[in-house]
Structures are given as structure tokens and as C-alpha cells.
Length: 460
Image 1 (cartoon, rainbow, N blue to C red):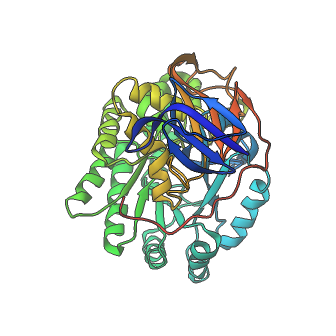
Image 2: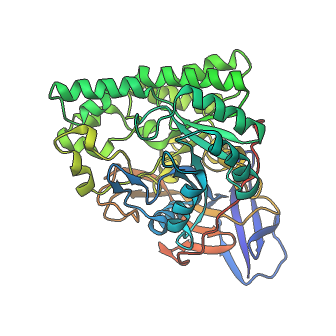
Image 3: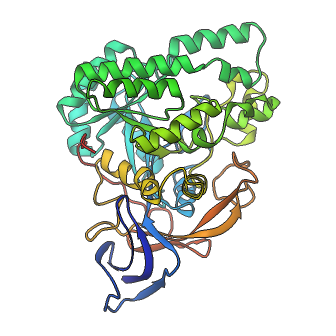
């Protein structure tokens, strides 16, 4: 089937112009003014913005955590992402200690295969790096198309690895052209503070925040940056939240080191005062926690300075009933926050409309940089001849209110309840097929493809 999108204001990471887009099958085959072509379907995008489908490289769907599972599965999560203009997600496989990476891959595939509505890929989280695991790295990069490996410097006793394992993994990943993602917080210090607060009977959600002060993230970020510098391995800090951690990256640039940085939409918009709402604050219990308003200013500046390349979500929703597991102890609250559907509209409304970032920067951090860093560009992340026709048609002026009563995420509250945003996703195409239009989803689970990724480009 062919589709012609007419008269849209096309926005990429570098361009801003009005033209037509002609799509044949899954691919963009022509872009130009007043294209003289016959198409099976025409879409008039006059007065609308047209940009590439969003890529969220940090989500957790159907993930086992703290005795339960995140409440969005691969069907509901990728569908909600499409409603919000995100056509591709990258989820995290978690290796069980003592098991192989391939055992973990099979477990995650059993939940994801034939269940995704939108396109997807995986990062491989390594929690037990040993001689056997080491042999699997090359296979994952060269055969499975999984080129990024996550490590945790926190979650002691479950996911955390030590610096010895980190260095060994970095050397092996570098050798084969991969990338290390890191959850950079000091797990030993957090564990100590958590037990200290519990021992003192300080059990409200506020103490989740106070158990993870800024120094825990700043120190771990500095340590990770130094290890990456020593090994020469490309590094990517996930969900960076604060001034101290970003300063570790700033310091690295003084020795000409390149470090990729991701923040998340919640850290740009929300702050730790939400934890003072008694147990209601559990809605925003995530790790790292929300920070201070000064950190929001740092992160917006970091985006414009090119130090922060990606805005993701760390989408890991839990229903209120699941959050209540920690009603008497903050350390038992499942960590996570629903945002997969809200990221693109919030970033536009709070970033572009309020003149914090340009339209081009918006597309760069939400679409293009994730594609480049994670080995999918130019197939994904841009509007160009030969690229997948993952396209969002967006009304920049339409105002609407975010609410759990209207969102499509499988969670019974919103982290942004009552938030008025300017800018609305109107139509979404996934590989040339209309996925979302008139607030309806026209594709089924199983339409989403697993996207094999190429080796890492460390030059963006």
C-alpha cells in the first residue's frame, strides 16, 4: 500500500520545511514539494508538524520486580507508546545470577514474541559476569543484534555487580563494538541508608528519597566515567537526574572523553516535594528518585549543551494495589513510574512551547539520538528517503489534559494527573501503516517487529 502525506511541516534533528512524503510499503520513497504521485491513501497534514516516530530506549514491560510484575505488558505498553507518538522502544532483559544471558533472552522472548504492537529491541542487563558470560557477548552483538549491555551499580544482592566485573565486561564489550549502559548509583551507600532509616522507624516514601541522596549518584557516575575512560569502552548513563552526576560528565569532557547521557521526562518536570504527600508519594517512588528544582535547570541546560543526548522514560508502571505493598515500609514499594504515553507530548509542551529547547533539539533527543546511539540510524529516527515510514503527525496548538481516565497505559493513576499540555499526537504511522488515528489504534499485537541493531557509533 502507498500513502501520501501532503503539506506537512517536516521536522528532523536538522531540518524544518514544508513538503510531501510518499510512502511505498514500509519505506519512505520520495520527499518533495507538490509530489505528482498516485497513492492509495492521502493524508492532509497542512498546519501540522510531521516528525519521526519517537524512540524510547528505556522501558520495562512485563518485568519481574520485588515479587510482582510491571503492569504494562508488551501489548499494552507498546500500544500506549504509539498513542503518545513513540513507535519504537528498547526494553531490558535481566540476567538471573547463576544463569546464562541466553537463558534470560529466552525468558523475555517468551513474553514479547508476537505480543508487541509497536517495534522493539532489547538491552541485555548483565548481573553475573564470568568466563561463560564473557563468551556470550560477541554472539549477542553479532548474531542477536543486541549491542548494548546494562550494568547496575545498585540493587545490592540482586542486580548489582562490582567494579571488577564492570571492568571485565567493559573490555569484552569494547572488543566487539558494543556499548555499556549503567544504572549509576552507589548501592552500598544506599543499602546502608535504607537500613538506617528503617531501623529508626522512618518508613514513609520520603525516606526512599533520603536514602538515595545526590552524592550516591554523583559518586557512582564519576566512578563509571573513570572506568569507561580507562577501558575506552563507550558508556551511556541511564536516567541521570542531578547536577552532581552531570558534573562528573562535564569533568570527563576536559580529558576529551565522550560519554552518552540519558535523562527522563519526570526528572525534567517533577521534584522531590511530591514525596511529602504521605503515602501518596509512592506514585513517584522510582530509582533514582526525583530531585530538586536546581537539578531540573541543570538537565535542561545539559540538553542544550549537548551533554544530555536522550530523553527517555524508564517506564515501569505498577498499579496502586501493587504500590500498597510498601504502605508500611518505603523499601517494599515497587520502584517505577508510568510515562511511556506522555513523554513526547510533555517534552513538546514543557520544552518547545516554553522555549527551553528548539523543535530540532526536540526531535534530536526524542527520536534521532536514540537511533544513532543504539545502532538503528537512518532506518529509524529520521524522515529521509529509504528510512522506515515511522511518522507522527502532530497538532502543535491543541490543548488537552493528561489523566488516568483517558490514558492507555495499564495503570490506574497518572504521574501527571490534571496536567494541561499544548500539542497533541493526531496520527501515527508505523512502517507505513496507520497505527493511530482519531484516537483509535488500527494495528494488533504481533505487528511490532524486533529490530536487530548494528554496532555502536561513538561519534554522534
